[in-house]
Image 1 (tube, rainbow, N blue to C red):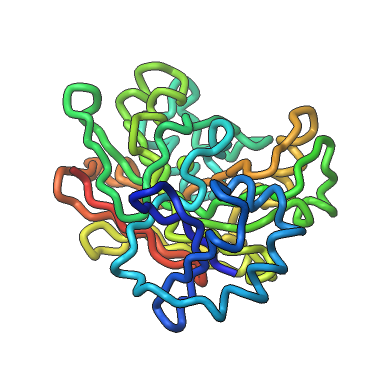
Image 2 (cartoon, protein in one colour):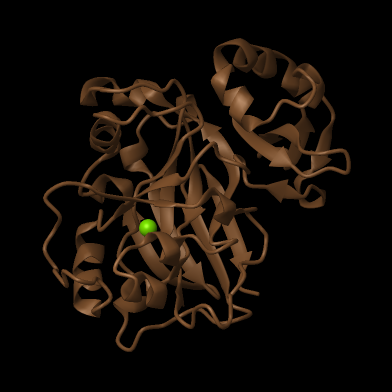
Length: 294
Ligand code: MG
């Protein structure tokens, strides 16, 4: 099932996206009043079967006339992110000089985990704020993101995918100058609107093999990143088992799995984003995230 969060006058509404018909079916009336995506995920065992059975009979609104928010517009806590998790990207980042203080082109021995503030989350078609005066080096990072269903601590590798509720796309927009100058990534990753997410959340049953997914990022129509998720240095089960080893994962937690080669600082000279640029990220079966730089 493909779920969306829609913006409406009276507040957010949960919808089921019928991508074949190009419509969104508002399922808010099948759920307790005020139910948001976090509650849907948390109570999926109860709500999922109801939505599967009854959503197809509901009227559809054309997708283009719906204002989509991020599928999880207000995550419970920071987005978990992973750095240097594709071989060629680790090399380009090391070469760029922005990887302070290590400046290493080597692959990490263990996953490099950092986070992105929840207030950075924005919709799949919303403008990305360029924050003039705060950053002059804006970059894109197309990523597959995992949404946790049942939480837990000490989740073993071989059971990790049982804890995945679904998948979405994230642009891990990065202010490279802040990332470099502050020697720590939180600020450079967390500016408002720097986490476009969506367009939908696709439940795990529709993605039997996440490693088979292909990711592409285009800037103004030009392909910049093209990779298979199977090329992750640390795969999704490894990331879940590593993070949950001593930190309880919660339903609705979002984990961005890392970006492949082809980001702006991978070029010489770097190709930073400018106002008016349009960044599009597609992942097979998950749709297209499309944001303009304001
Ligand atoms: Mg990233």
